[in-house]
Length: 190
Image (cartoon, rainbow, N blue to C red; front, side, top):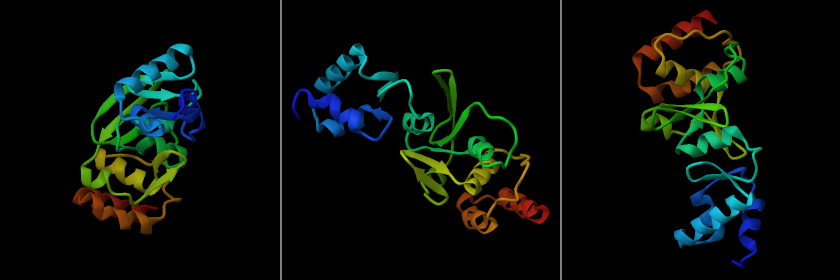
């Protein structure tokens, strides 16, 4: 890669959030020390923004959902974030809730990101997860199941829009008798 092409390769990427690994792959660079020096130079010049450890953006205007799924991977947007967006719950949500392999809460640029740990067999299963742009987002059915998995008692405001066939298709993934009883009760009440 030519000297002037390094920044151009990043700016041409369709991602708004790039990890150090993403950039090294774009640059086809195996020398991580040189890549880090080059990245620090671009950050100091203001060509890139470092928003978190090893995560860079092209500007301060970046997709917060994309960032949320890049902090700790594998991860996908779920829980109340999806439920509020889909009209399943009516409460306003400020934090972005993410399904991940660990439980953490971090704050970046006045946005709170809450990571909730799910078992690997659930987290790694692609059923009910959509890939929109550069982000993985749970369907409303998967978000309902994720929420019931983490919360023993949860109230949903509006379940009429759920595809109950899809809910029952994904339910065995959780292998949880309590959830099965709750889903059966919610289905009867709909």
